[in-house]
Length: 431
Ligand SMILES: *[C@@H]1O[C@H](CO)[C@@H](O)[C@H](O)[C@H]1NC(C)=O
Image (cartoon, rainbow, N blue to C red; front, side, top):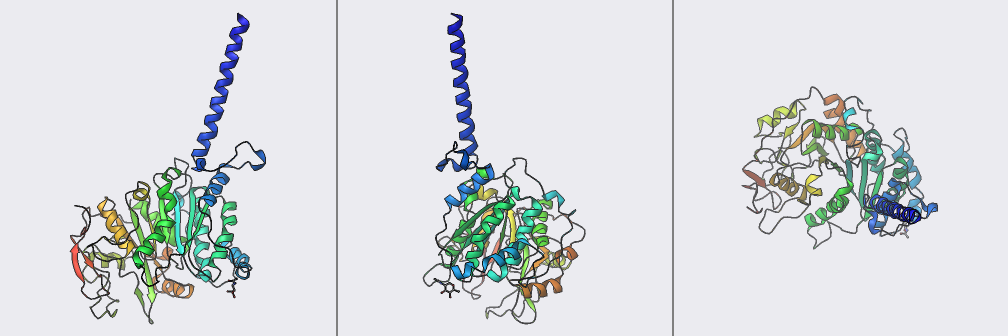
């Protein structure tokens, strides 16, 4: 009798242990979304840390669709060294000061959920010469913010200058740092005839943030996306945009981007950016001339004032080379990058993105004018010399007085610069 009872207890105990083990293994896997993958948990030769497991899942989920060119791959190591070592002088690059660590200390460290909370997204094409500066600064940001808190997601397309080969080899370096690295390749070509350029660009941007949309549970609910174009950017530029997003409780913060058409720089993202009067940042007459580009915010004295003082100010829409924004509406599946709806003004995907942000209650969108960027190293140096490096521009932090309502009318520039018209900000959206 006593014998029988202890047998039963032993049996129950063993069952319990088996159930607990089974749960531990399956929960451990689903946390990284790798439940879909054929991972054998008992093969100890293959034992992976959770971070390695996640990385493995990502490289399986996003297989590369092309092979390296061996000639180009041979030059990759010197680029990688330049990317990983800010002191490396092999390739010319915009020189950047090291930011004040105290100012940005609050951005460091793990989130409460212990899940990544910074998502760096880029679409890159044919820009190998920029990688030491651009990716170098992002790597510095990842090191500063804590690699385990960061994910780097890059979509490479159609490069034959070594951009792909360098980004492919970068995987190992980022893994060693301790961050997740998502590299995808795409053949989408926004410039090919017969393609809707905006839909192509929107698809490329969606690819870059795809993991956030598909696997939101792998990210902290308060994740910030830092989405960068192919610009010459400094670590302090990135940190300042993230800092202002937190300090201002902003949904989105943007830099100011510039282009040197002649001797003087002009604000670049004119087709996308709109101020709180719904107007473009400068006037372009129907002739398409940029002669009035020197006069920023001709009809918005408040924006003009803040710009002069390098203080952040609210806008209706911006992208401006680099932006930091809340991942929430993406993770909740509320918005995506898109082309215009039928009957809606033809406009760029970042402007539609801002419009959809407003529509879903994320209208705290601001320009941070202390951050000025250009699209190559040389011009980047010129613009920083002219407008000042970010650290030299930041003064006393003043809180933006947020407007809760968007401008009633927003300028549409559908067909080049002719037929510019002010349309209701939400035209084309469901009432
Ligand atoms: C590899 O790249 C080199 C240098 O750009 C080029 O000359 C060569 O044709 C490429 N090889 C292939 C197989 O595409």
